[in-house]
Length: 237
Image (cartoon, rainbow, N blue to C red; front, side, top):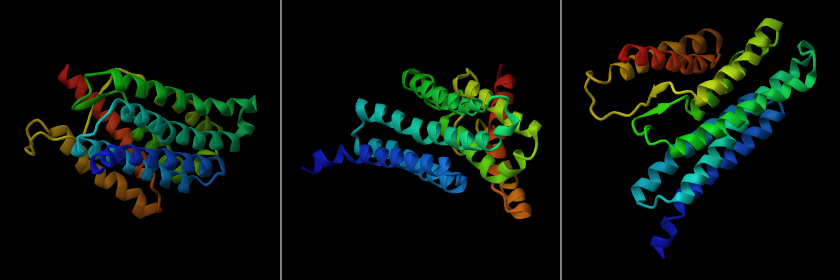
């Protein structure tokens, strides 16, 4: 009986991720972006532990893999798209046609495509090909919570966000190798990029937090992660 119960534990955690994403989407559409971001983060915690639990209990299964992708698209695809939809809707006076706000959901579709590719791609054991969906979700959530009102103050900034939706959608399915924070050894050699990233994350996060009380530094960290991955790839090639 205990053995039978064990196999359901990871899927239960995955479902908690999915529920977190549903709650995040509700608050996003209500315009309460900080609460939406909170539940995206909670979903990310569940996402971290479901795979770990499956490996520890030796109960990985194909259905768990598919369920995980579904939950991830809700939490890291649909929920941040809902935040962006609410943002674009609030600045609809800048749009020639207010239905263009629905462009935000393009990112949810590309998130689903990225997750489907990930399930079939055997190259991503120690790194990623393309931007991971949790990183993309955290970028947009933190950016909107930290600087959303400022971004709504100018048509130029507003259209910058509009264009950014397409850029991040492309990054999700791009062939750019991006490093993962996985360590085979703890030494500096071979882990230079990871340690540089971790060390630079501290000022990127703390400076806007301490000076302005803004969590926009989290968005800066994700942007720096993409840039550093691209630089490292160019250097290796």
